[in-house]
Length: 77
Image 1: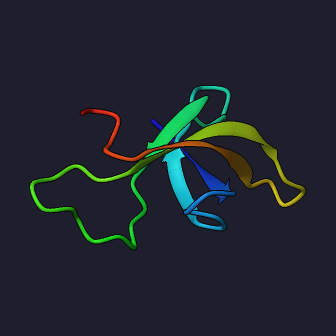
Image 2 (image 1 turned 180 degrees about the vertical axis):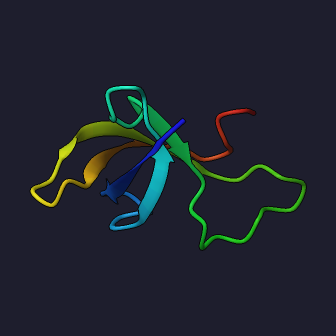
Image 3 (image 1 turned 120 degrees about the vertical axis):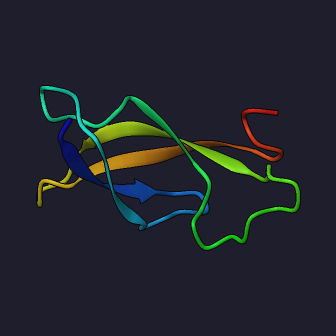
């Protein structure tokens, strides 16, 4: 599986750049849940998760993922 570079726009991860898995057409996933890497892990796991949605590639070819919502206690809980 290949990867594609994305920039997260808005929300707590604004301007974070990461490599995400790409589909055969070279596009990132439609949606991505992210726990911001600068936040220390919450005791017992969990913590806020941030939902981002695929937007479009910028002029430099880096895709953008736009902030949609924060799940305060994590999406798996």
